[in-house]
Amino acid sequence: GECSAAVYGDVLTCATPEWTFGYARTTLMITSAGSPLTTIQDSPMWQRVCLTGVCGFRPFGLRVGNNTGVSWLYDQQELLRSDFLGEETTFRFTTESTLFQYSPGTQTFRSVSLFSSIVDCQNRSCFFGQRTCSGGENQGALCEMDGQCPGSSCTSLNSFRVLGASSFTHFSVGMEHYLIVANFWDGRETNVGSALFQIVGASGDFNATGNETTFFDGVRFVQAVPTQGAKAWRFFSFGGSHWLAVANFDGPSQVFPFTAGVGVDVDAGMSLDTTRAVAAEPFEVNGVQYIMVGSLSADGSTPSKLFRIGFGPLSAIEVAAVNYGGVYSVQSMELGGVTHILLAVNQDRPSVLLAVQTSPLERLVRVQLLNTSYVTSASFTVTAAPYLVLGQDFDDTLLLRWNGSMFLGPPDESTVAKDSAGGQILADTSGAVSVFAFPSALLGEFVEDYILVATRNSFALLVADPNGVEALDGPVSLQVTDDFVYVACLHSRSITAFARDRTTGKLTYSKDASYLSNWTQYIVDGVDLDTIIQDPVLGFDRWQFGYPIKGMNLIQLSEDNRYLYVTSAVDDALVVFEINATTGTPRLAQVVHEADLDVDGKEINGLVG
Image 1 (tube, rainbow, N blue to C red):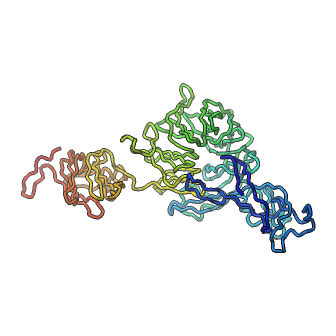
Image 2 (tube, rainbow, N blue to C red):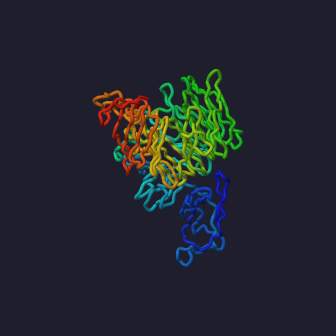
Image 3 (cartoon, rainbow, N blue to C red):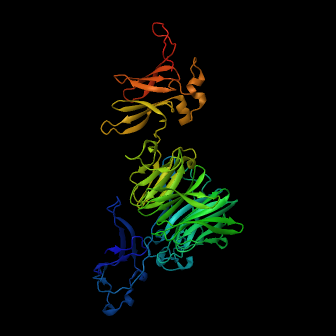
């Protein structure tokens, strides 16, 4: 039968067909239907097989009506009789949450731990939130100790610690690594505890390890923390102490002290006056700790709030509020020495970027409205420039670039030239539910920058293109062949090449076909000065500063495209490059200077400037 629910409801109502002859084992399966607006296909969400009374089957002796004393199987063929009466039952939904280990060397993931009661309930009956025998003749029976389970053991309750999780948050203190889970609901109510786990055996370079087999020993349950519809946790440190903040959807948000090796001090926490909170973002400005809590409401009637946190004694003072509907994620970032807050909106309306002002008054000032649609997650990173990654429900993920005063999106026909170095649309990432951008600094010796995008059915790791345009500062002249475009860049002191698609005209940066002077390589690639070519006559300094193309003002190809000629005003030179017919790579062939002698021994004049 078909099931229906509110768009963002917690209850499914299913119209099940009349029970006909069927197998003696009942199977309930729910399938998530695809969307014509996205590439999401139909996919199974959940399946349940159960033969116990709590699943709606009544033992033979308890059958009612005229079925008493009649076998509940039809013709002994393990088919159920269609005229038996059952009883109403409640089903709990359970899905897997998985911890993956990433290897930067191979750029691959492998599953190392599962968080779900599905592990204990596979292939047997399972009572929700209760201990049962793991096997033997009493498999699936309720128990309190191993002695009640001959030939097996009485399971623990740790498989029920992850219940309707909204998010997982990793943090570390010293050499110890932790995961804290924001449990939203258990299938009936949101007044359930969240769970703290420790990653056992993780080394201090957890994100940078090249050894996939020795640093991870498992996940250990540490503590249950009381929460009410928890949506997200954030870890922060202040004054030498460590803290955890949680955004609660169905109650006030909370801040708890945390001690490594001990856990969360739930008795020493404090509440934040919030309603329908979905995100909490701690940050520090001028030695003062703040927490921005985002609240979800369609019309903005439930404000997102900024709190100033005091630690002696522990206190929270509301200093600003923003009535903006649809807030779903909050991200803090420092841009140009000023702390900014992004309120990412899960509606078909712009997200908003705010600047935090602390003097003379504490307030939030709107800086920019970002053209987004149904944002589900946001992540900020700084690589060559500050970037903002925004996952969207029905559109591809956005990568926005900060230009010093605003975030720029992908360029289009209306983009002015000065804003063309903007963002990017990350193709095939529609339906993202979580995004995380992290620079190469987190991966030790590995130099790539990454973006992790998780959708409803999978996740993808995107790596920064190592062939990004490196030297295009101050273009002054260009030449075009069938396969390449060469651009003379005055300030970059380079000849930057692009491969050219003959059909579409699309350009792709080609480092191999570019000529990067020693100056360019030193600035872009960090070339050791000791390795720079030294000319026995001209000396070291000229090569270091971009000789022989410093001060380029014109480039020209020969008619057969075999040679590229360059005039250099600063080096007082005419430079000749030989072009490789296959790769397009220019090779420095000759440099003609003012006052050089020609083939007849005559002095060359007229090349100054």
